[in-house]
Length: 234
Image 1 (cartoon, helix red, strand yellow):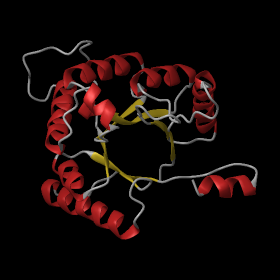
Image 2 (tube, rainbow, N blue to C red):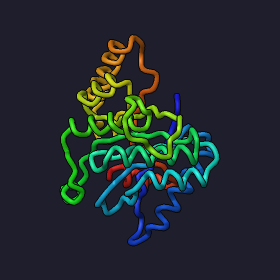
Image 3 (cartoon, rainbow, N blue to C red):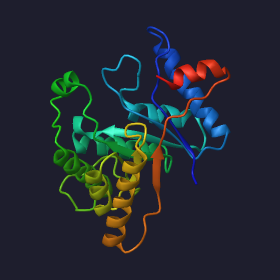
Image 4 (cartoon, rainbow, N blue to C red):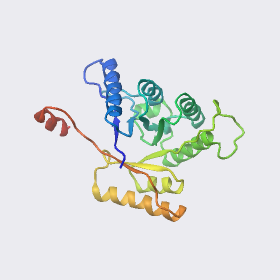
């Protein structure tokens, strides 16, 4: 079993953005020292207490501050972006830090204000199409008539962040890895159904069992028991 950390970039005091990013950097280094397989960061917009808005830039910073831990984006909120632009950024990161990154993709709709501001298409079909296009650009799977620069040979094996059977089916049919967001849908029977759907569809389509299935859960850690119990209820 591979154990990893997902960090959301929590703002602990008013206007303490530098501190929040420094805490995140220190946590990434600590996870590496403890031997964790990977360190993931999320993407949030217009959320007062969460400050990671551009995870792809932050991936490069964290790679520069660490030596070998894999660093994941959990995930790129692709509904807000154009696939070609994301593909260029992914290739740039992989050129600078070969085999360090894990690219996860999510379909979170963000807040209504952000959706309107970014003119995001919120349909699942649009997200699925964008994900396919992004992977095609990066992996050059369809010999598209446009060149993604920097042009490198490193392909990616994307991870899809899921909380529904619909997404599980799409991921399985396209041979994508998955991470189930337990912290978004903490229902044991439902999680089991979604993951089993993924396994069944994957095995039927590809003829073998999927090798990597992740589950993301909330973990509260600290030294003061009373404080931990208070945080746990939030």
